[in-house]
Length: 201
Image (tube, rainbow, N blue to C red; front, side, top):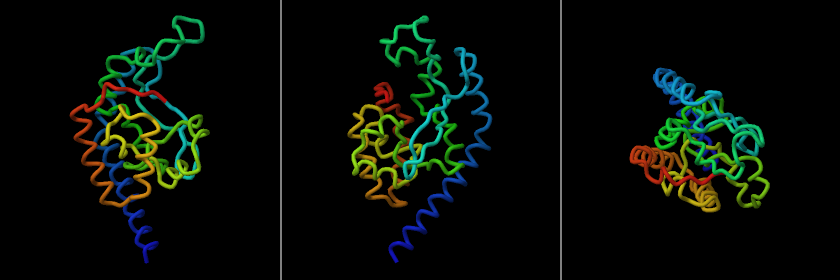
């Protein structure tokens, strides 16, 4: 009975993801267009930042974001490699990051079933190589656009603590927990809580 109930809840979660992502992509299309134009005119380079991440059951996928940084020049041309990534964030990119607008293209990832609206944030493959057996349990759920780590401290939390929060989410997952995280995430983003503290990787 518990297995059937969980399966039903996961089905509701997926249905919510599909309906919400469709609504956002259709209703929010003017915002997408304006953001794309601002990104394009703010600095040379592509509109989207595409990066390989690790998703459910350890499957790789390509995550989508609006580009928020200048494109790194080829090695030895125009930039010291010791320069921090923060120095490459464009003014419009900083605004997009502060309010989470750079993540909007991930609704396409959600619609394709690679991500969910709420879940652990997807790591890059090189970081997964150092995961313990226990930490790999985060891959039992689809990665999320927003996570428990966002409501607990956003980018100010060290990576190891973020992983622990992701594990806590997976262990205690319920539809109610998703609603709580989603509601609190809206407040955190609108208030720009810990938006300026960036931990790369």
